[in-house]
Image (cartoon, rainbow, N blue to C red):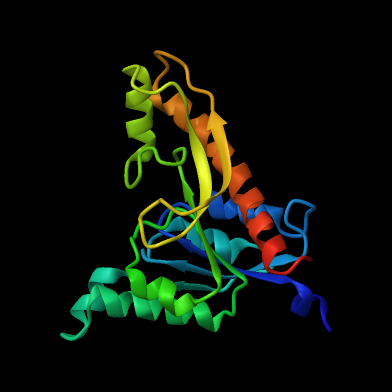
Amino acid sequence: MTDAAQRHRIVVLISGSGTNLQALIDAQNTPALAHAQIVLVVSNRKAAYGLTRAQNADPPIPTRHLALQPYLKAAPDRTRATYDAEIARIVLDARPDVVVLAGWMHVFGEGFLDALGSIAVINLHPALPGAFDGTHAIERGYEAFQKGEVDRVGAMIHRVVKEVDRGEPVVVREVEIKKGEPLEAYEERLHRTEWEIIVEGTRKVLDEVRPA
């Protein structure tokens, strides 16, 4: 069996600049993510810089992009459900052991998870479990802390279920936040934590799927 055949296969879904994807790319072939290979990066935005990061990797990582609105407008019978099914088909063709949502800004319907079956799907969310589900979690967490409504903030990797951001946590990490500091200072600290936990969470799930 070749070395490539022995490696865990990772598919990453992105929507933006791909800094979290870059953390996974950099972790390949290191003790942090040994025996693992990103086999496909999918974006729902053609201009996402994460696609360039994938193409600049060594070796280059195959990429696909499929934007929702152009897809819907291309045929009258297309819906969000058929879009999700098409993304699922693209993902399944890559035969992943795990699918990582790394800044993927599209909420899947039930059909996507049903199509993937037993394949693990995990998501990075910039909040602690049960806090600030959905969009703008960083800003909402920052504002709540500054107002004294919460006393801790953080980020997590969790399993994806049909309820948004409510899946079982895989890695949870609190992030330091200071009274009166600008949002940008907290964001920078949070993003550095995200780059660590997305690698740690991916490794943990892959070890459960098929220890390398």
